[in-house]
Length: 122
Image 1 (cartoon, one colour):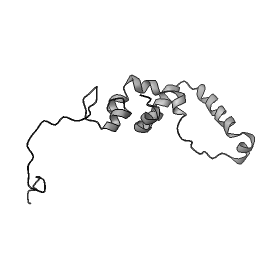
Image 2 (cartoon, helix red, strand yellow):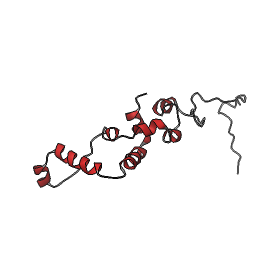
Image 3 (tube, helix red, strand yellow):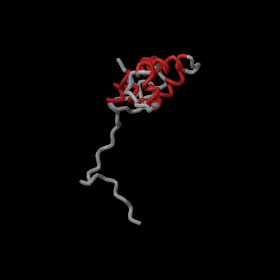
Image 4 (cartoon, one colour):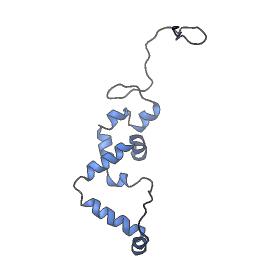
């Protein structure tokens, strides 16, 4: 088997130097992109999900601010209740749950980057 030449195509080996990432997580020092730095308050995704900033975003208002999902219901229920009434019924049921905060956190963790972009006011 032939050994692979890992040098750049032009045969030039760049000099060794200490690489310093342009953006680094303020907690763990992991390299992050400028987009992640802005999205996650200067943190990497992992440190962001353990931060106070993330915990502060876990509100029902933020959870309800996303796009609408179409749900199919029987025509009769759509005849009896309008969209706002159905939403109010579901929110009233949600208010009775003991694990509201955990459900909102699980929802946010489904797509952390989308959640952070929607809720980052910093």
